[in-house]
Length: 263
Image (cartoon, rainbow, N blue to C red; front, side, top):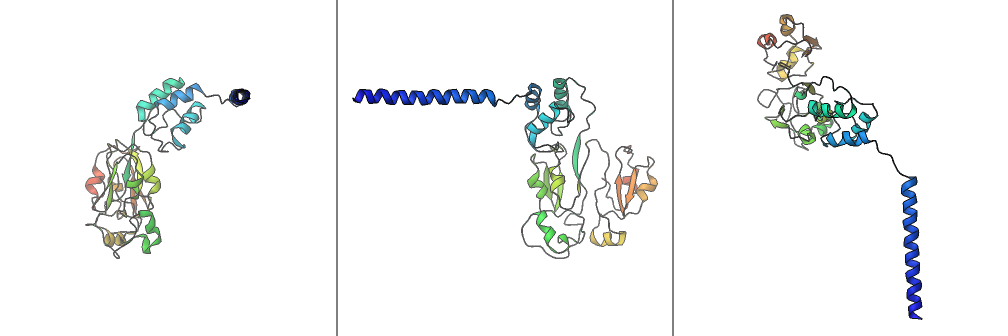
């Protein structure tokens, strides 16, 4: 009797196992997802940082978009030209020209050069200062707040806070754009790695107001614009910017700037 029970139990367990195995096998066939071989190959050559700098949700999202022809082969800012060429080879197309970019902080108003309206004591996160008077303690409402939200967001340890202002290490920067997105003052931009000059100020206040707030703020005097032989300077709302496509790197704008804010 006991032997019969054992045999019955063994048969039941074996039958259940066989049923489950057959069910899983059929399900695997019916619900199989075809994987694009090119997509897998592209994903393997991408750096795997999943930083989102390409505009997609991680490297897998970009690989899928490239395989479908919805994204350029050189869309990865972290991988740069080398990765772009590898992806282009996989896709059987030309990589095209790729310009390396780096993050640039449009502010040099450190603790020694700016004035304060009050002393701030609170959470040290730049985004939180949107809820305090004047958007921060600095008199200049456009300047770097210096609490390092960009530092925390950077996955490549390319940003440091130096005397109250964010400073980018261009050799470490991969232009993923996370610092650009997180800065509440919108004063971080991406510029070409080879750029010779840039205006390190984002203030749009009139000259007298800027001078009271910061020793090195752009006052919109237009001396840089008037003396630029390449017509590469744009003045917009009392703030100068350089058209990097026109700039020849002659340095005249830097020499003429009275506030020495062209760096």
